[in-house]
Image (cartoon, rainbow, N blue to C red; front, side):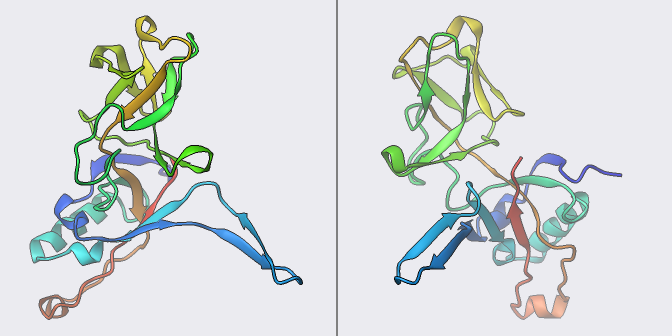
Length: 215
């Protein structure tokens, strides 16, 4: 029996992903009190993104690529990389990632591992989103504002963290920052992709739902 949590380190067809729709979802519980006020509680700590890639299918070639990808993933069985067309960098979408983009933490002289995150908002109210699938070759890291050599760190895919070499561990109080492009781990949120050739030529777009997975 296959492990249903397995991940295939392959990218969903890029041309289709850039036409997809979707975004983050939060799950909160809201209870209205007798006073008229509300009591609100977060049911889960992390947001979860969902997409519909059907809006990105523009040609029969696109549709074939998606069908082949769907079959290779065995439907919803295996997760994979998806390039979010709206949020795929450590910075704003119109600029290039830099090593100072996101704060990962501060050194203490012994700590070598720093989880990769993207921060939304400022200060104590910011949300630190875990980033576990940076795009290969795009990760840049800085310590105390000075960019580190690629030889001084690596990325631990299993832990989702930047790991410094023993000789490059940040000193106490030194800020560790990073910049990168990244993908979202998702799975197909359906067991079937169905469309007729006639309806496709007439402009009817298939629904291809995708759901973010927590690795």
